[in-house]
Image (cartoon, rainbow, N blue to C red; front, side):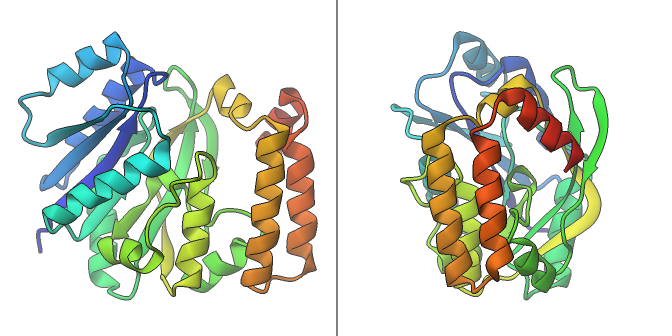
Length: 271
């Protein structure tokens, strides 16, 4: 059964235009063809990004939405979801502007949801690439079943956000992203999903190449961010009735977040 899929692809001024074009092309060359990419410009974008966008102005599979102010990922995603509702879209995928979806990604995730009507969101395994697109020989796999995802969430996010594929009803249940979160909006989305009986799963297949460079680590700096993450984690652990080990891990993550970048790099490599 063919289904129209909308992919939510936010972009902002600091995104690399070459990476953005690669990301967009990876979606337009999917084996599932009934697909539209909703590009959401989070405030003004660079001239180079504008040039890339202009290349696709006549492509029926690309629709560009411009938002005058930079408000953050959560706000843009909520607005794009609202636009998809107008078209009665039932299936939504996510991706970041510097990652690469493998050719069968959308087909595999759509087929999985069609075969498993109880599941609201499905992710998949990811493999890391560097700034030049070279494989870093690191694959990250996530728990496959809902119960495993819920158990895993006591320590870490159970899905790779850029590799997720949703039924629209996930956002009906969870009420969408929390606009006030410019960081960690995905963690809170999973929290709201578990609280509202959303069902989670992951594919064992690699579906996305995840770009990791120096900015990946620097984006995770800051005492203020670390403090908010700890506060959120304590709240999540209490609401979902996780054991004391979840709080211990939350404090360890707090310590890592405020540590120097070279320590974060080392810990990330061995996780």
